[in-house]
Image (cartoon, rainbow, N blue to C red; front, side, top):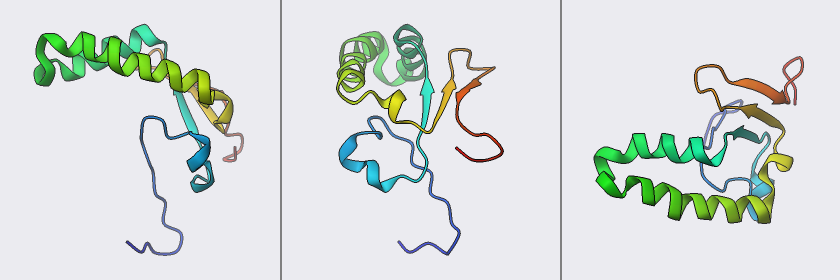
Length: 102
């Protein structure tokens, strides 16, 4: 779909910092959170849909895939901006934007 000049497209996705699609992004943002918090947040979010399987889904499927992705891709090092998102209510900048630029 065509976009007007000056439009901004925000893409949010798992595994979005893979090398084979790296050329599509002008700015890469990584939200850093530890695996335990990621499993807990995903479980809370998906419990209504996945029921008792929510923990296993996030720990044994998504968590394992994310671990492989992290080892193979090192997405944090590829990011222009890194945000510590361990405290969901108080994220803070680790690396990136200074005076509006990465």
